[in-house]
Amino acid sequence: MKKSACILLLVLLSHFLLAQPAHQVKNLKITILSTMLAQKGMGEWGFAALVEADSVKILFDAGSHEKTVLENSKLLNIDLSQVPRFVISHNHWDHTIGWMPLRNEISRTNRQALSVTHVGKGIFDTRLTETGGDETKMRQDSALYVQSGGKIITHASFAEISPGIYVTGPVARKYPEKNYDQRWQKKDAAGKTVADIVPEDMSLIILTAKGLVLLSGCGHSGIINTITQARDHLQQETVYAAIGGFHLLQNSDEQIRWTADELKKAGIRYFMGAHCTGIEPVYQIREWAGLKRGESVVGSVGATFDLVKGFTPGALAR
Image (cartoon, rainbow, N blue to C red; front, side):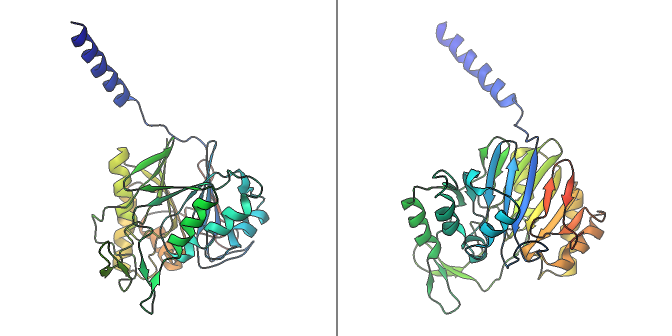
């Protein structure tokens, strides 16, 4: 009898836990710290953004030069010594060069600053350079990062890293979005040269009462593949905002129209295309997704997204 009662209690408890709604972030601000367009600060071919979600702060990507993110954050009065975590979207130099320099510099003020890094499975695979040599800098930097007291968390699947904040892990390629250079190559586990489809490509998802907010480094997996994975996991249909690099600059008008149509179906209200998105695709998405001026903008250094106010893009991108 006691055993049956215990089993019943466990079943009821599990149903109760499953019925609990997922945590929703109430206050959200995203600030661009690295991209090409800059009215204030330094522009570069790279990407980085600071996420402030309720009391949580995360630095997403690290830019393509050692000091860009550091100098831009100072100029914008942002104190990175109070940011404990990195998320690195994928292993390309324009997102990773600042990783160790930032950790080394900021940890002088606070040893816990930037001391945890979230990455997708496959990020430390050996890439091939244009001349056919092995590119292993990310692996070397990871060893230095751990020696500095840092911790690296590798994600093989969708995961919640803080209440209401998720990493996609490697994204399933449901749709034929090939937003990467198909000449890229890497080595598989057996050392064989294979096509590099950037399998570790990972985005950040923030769950809010208004819908999902997507932050992407390059979106090599495809923006629609990424939001599909997030919607499936979180059972949330609405994508409120998409911000970051989406590697649409080489896509045809037909491909961009399809992307815009899918974003419109998902309920997109705000779109900021930075870094590798391309400038023309931003305006095409504005038109084809039915957005207004100020709702689909080119990302620039210092530009912000606020859950209440929307975009503050800066005069050049407005």
